[in-house]
Length: 579
Ligand SMILES: Cc1cc2nc3c(=O)[nH]c(=O)nc-3n(C[C@H](O)[C@H](O)[C@H](O)COP(=O)(O)OP(=O)(O)OC[C@H]3O[C@@H](n4cnc5c(N)ncnc54)[C@H](O)[C@@H]3O)c2cc1C
Ligand code: SF4
Image (tube, rainbow, N blue to C red; front, side, top):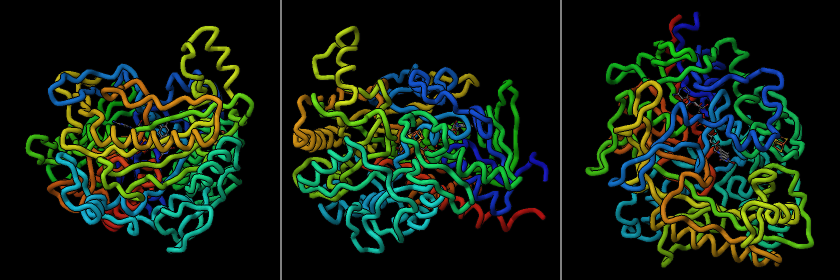
């Protein structure tokens, strides 16, 4: 076969595109992967220099906002303005995508997250869902996804301690965990000073701490595809940067080599897809521009969009695929249910203790799930859902992550002295909160601003809502209780949610929605197999399919869904392969 007309085109080669490309090529399908950024894969020393914090802060592997950015308005009456720089979120670019940058925490969602509308109605009554909240069930249960979570965890070598194996609660794990069929493939990473203090403190307070599930390897590991990786060296530079050693599982060191070695996978890097070509219900291929700005059309029998939540939604809208969401009528689904997470941080500072904060990965730590999802009674609290609370080493990098006592100047000699004094004498506690979907929070095409190809940018209409503010205050109170119980000398409290969503302050790159899944074609874009209702040979995979933000990081679930979508593509496409 020539690579000119593949069976399947995969748009975007991060975790999702990489997983799907590997599964499809292993099953005998020919795949072309189109990626807007460069291909470092296989180049010796491609990520050398990752441990330069200045380079990390310069966002060199992040979507280049001078080529393509987003516009934001806080409500429908404002005029949206473009982001000059990625800040609140920093999606990746280049082969490997955001998988190169992520912290490596690899969570499963609890059962509640798959059917929140049903669960809330059953526990609190239908009236508990606030006016305007477009909370939706997924049309898929945790049990449906569980085998694909297993597959992802074995491929990536996720380490942790099981909390629930086949319904039996396990000591030292998360007692709120949904049942797993077996323990994690590798043990958790080593304990370090700060996380150990958090663990002992919360245990004293009556919580049930458990190790954060991590895709940074705790031991050398060979996965079921035969890919061997070495254990993490605890160097501490993987927050927002690629791991030079391949110890953190990313698409470049796990799934993409498997696709390449089949001989059925062709990567076209520096190629930006601008449109899915289609005749109503059937896609013919895609249109893309290469690095020289030359326009191409590539045909295939099926198309997978795996270009992150924002680009997936923008590609659908710019291609005229599916029905755009209309917030006035609530009809149409493309762009609907934009969701997110907030992050709050409080720091406990100790004059006479050191924690070795200079080693470790962001995924080394302990968490509690007592305030996640519906694990607690929300009666009278004024908000729904919740989030995890955790501590980790090296959450934000060696310099950027160092807190100083309130009142310290933000630059100059006094700030430098404070950094020198406190850099290894703090423990950070993080609260992570689900941002629920709302009728007025959505994605559409900007009427004014365009990219370098003259195509409309994606417009985000979003602001913090009442549910977010009440949840934030509640979580901040719980975090304050934990920090105080550590008995620190100084406390840096959480910054608080600003009056409006601020594009500069990092929250999370956990953007969801825009092409949500569901059981009903009238209110969702894709089926629970991530296949488009309106165009049967297009799959739209990634965070775009999640109907709401959740209290748990989404990537484990996004990757499990990618395995499930690959299963569907193989089931429907492999048999139709031309001889
Ligand atoms: C700093 C950071 C820390 C994070 N930490 C965690 C964590 O600890 N736990 C967790 O659960 N999640 C975390 N995340 C989120 C996680 O990285 C993402 O959920 C996940 O990687 C998304 O995978 P994806 O394949 O859907 O998208 P991506 O990995 O972003 O891949 C999409 C790819 O598509 C390409 N693309 C986009 N548009 C086009 C186009 N038009 N044409 C061609 N190619 C295109 C992009 O360049 C990119 O390579 C973090 C993210 C960041 C940035
Ligand atoms: S801490 Fe471990 S996973 Fe992170 S960059 Fe260093 S070796 Fe890689």
